[in-house]
Length: 234
Image (tube, rainbow, N blue to C red; front, side):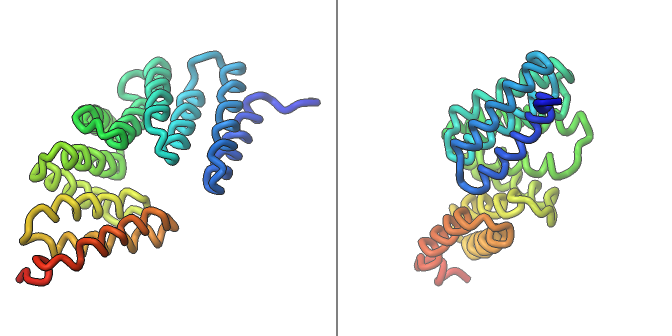
């Protein structure tokens, strides 16, 4: 009992990584996550649900710093472990694949992100998962379609995402509104609605304490609000 059990210590380190990430200490969070991963592999071997979760969490830390290519590597490892321990439709696989799609969007690889989002959707639907999972994945799919220039499809998926997400207290609720605002902006007759959705997104991010993202939406609003075609719209 002179030293903590490796699994208990791994859980402590994972909790520390979350705290460090929220405090802006990304390097510290990554170090804690990597140490936790090594301890879990020591305790369980290379294949265990906790290892898949830890790999996904490291990916999320990297993605938060926009290190999407590195994040993608961890998500794919998490998917592989999840598939081995739970099968192709396990929730661990769905989570890893969903995060892969987000990272691919971050890299501007929209066609790959679209296909990966659709793979995550298929997992959620076969599993009968909560609307939150399907709605957040449709939001990511809508962003992929927007990036590909497939605007009408993007709007359709994003509208479905809004319905499914409802009032869920997650960042996907304001995110889907902001992506939808950007998609609608391409149609002059929908620009007033686009601005209204962007304002809702800004307020939603502010409520969640995501001040940096709220500032990005605010900057978009300031740029687009003064456009003469908005003032002239009926």
